[in-house]
Length: 258
Image (cartoon, rainbow, N blue to C red; front, side, top):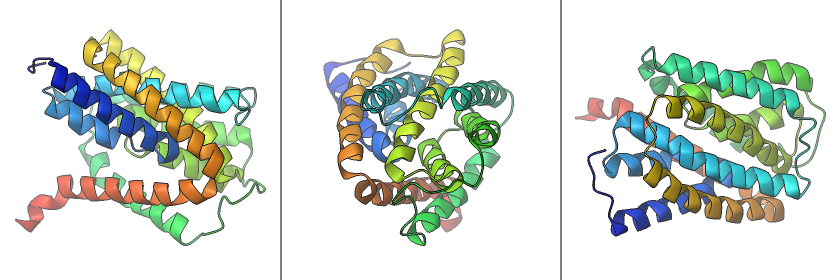
């Protein structure tokens, strides 16, 4: 890390992490706020990704604990999805250190656009619990392991992908899907973080300061999820997905406009 850790930098990163934790607890996408901030603070790309996993784990842990304590999540039912998400994330984290993730970075904006259209043209989707298309076991060996792999390999939009999977495949209400999403997102964060720690890439002082902000923001966002539910989550997912899409499209195709 080239930057000097000053009080101003600590306050800035704490504020950024608090905002990211709030947004992430509701709609996902917090990493699109924190990773650029970490890069701006002087961390290398690998350090930024690793430190982001540390602070992001704090946010997803906080949100998960809140949802579990409020009985919005049944951990017993999630044992297999948690295990498969962990496996997927480990595989993704190992693979991303061996091959170029550039192709995936170019494709993700189009997947996010699909999420936006999915919610915009299905206004009643997730309004209440419905029959699922597949079993929880099949979900675990397909969506859970696949999205876990994606989070370990790349990451942006993981929360949105999990939420769509819970609603579309298992028939969960939007509130229940968001609560369960945080538990699986936390699992994939922890799995990925372990391998970044082994690689010595985490900047601990920065990550721990931001973790405190994440915990605060995630708690505030989690409360709104349970109190506002569908009316808040749907528009937030659409907005966050659009912002992530715009950012990724600009980074990958912006040069074509020059």
